[in-house]
Image (cartoon, rainbow, N blue to C red):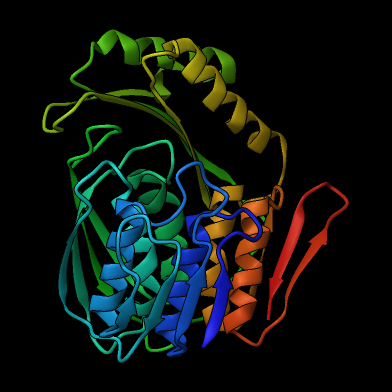
Length: 338
């Protein structure tokens, strides 16, 4: 049984999610201690507990310690089972992080699966729906599995109540990919989503983002949501190239002006645009696990965060392969798996 200390590295929920995913994929039982010890509210919160229960359902696992606030957990998987699943968090916690936990197992299962999820789809603590749809899943398809996602209604922090689904077609074999260059710029878009809030908030965000980035009005789009149970706002800035799409998100807050939300998001995107690496820091975290499961591949990213380095260390505890992190002359970083 592999023992995972959840207090090491960045000390958050990613250690739990990656370890559960690899436990299911490899069949190796795992014991967690000090779960999320580095966080202000340590232990299992609702979204983490839902992820544990989802992993147990998908793999027929024997679990001990699966309760709110628990800082220890034992997880002993059995066989991965394709099927139709439904998981509801019951809070604004990210349901997409629950999907992240079980997707590696379902993408190598013996048949297709459908996963219906309820919870947060747009909150500041996880990649939003559009990031998965536009940035991650197209690259995952190149590795092998095909995942088609549908957003029935968004769920914003703190109300939650979002609903989405994923249809997963597994791959017989995972293929390594190389992502070194962005390729030609194809499209750029600034999308401001508002739910139960004045449309002028979206307009102010878009005006600020366009001015900061130097984008024309033709790139700006407003989406007013009426189906979400609570108020919310997200600004999504995307740039699509031949080989990759980068998505940067800013989230509205009652204590932060629309202009400040837009400036933060646009500033983050400008850093990406000023570099040459195709992979942003959030996408780097997502790509590591499927490439490790494929046994190889490489990509060039902007930087390595503590989050990324912790993920690499966790993967190495389950899989016998090298993951090299090599700084490049242009201040980007080449990560080679296998």
